Image 1 (cartoon, rainbow, N blue to C red):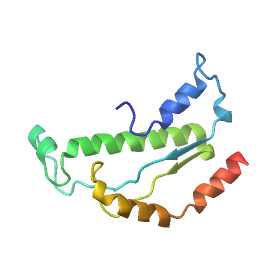
Image 2: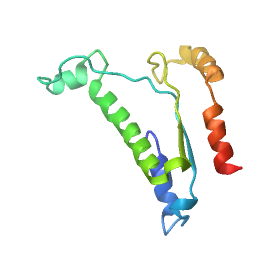
Image 3: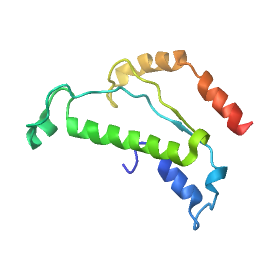
Image 4: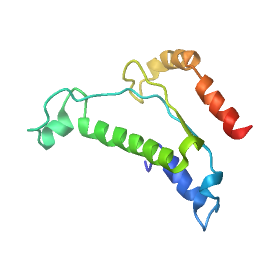
Length: 130
């Protein structure tokens, strides 16, 4: 996996002189995520070593959680700073954690998607594309 949220990679390719050669001012980006469940490490991690960062149970494998969540949040920040109001991230907050391989949660996720308020995204699309 190169980018869990490839927004900044897309911007970089779009402005690349050897690729698309777009002006940054001409780029609008709608970034669609798969949902986000904010996890927190509630324990004091001051004395944690490698074992605790890899083998903890809440959240499971906290090092991976911190790395992936941090990369996604950094990408949102960078894209937003580069494009300002021409960037919109659609990534609903999930009420509970859902494993990527938990197919039994598909009906729950479909229900969340159907109930999700899309007006801000639709307004942004209308302002930036039409």
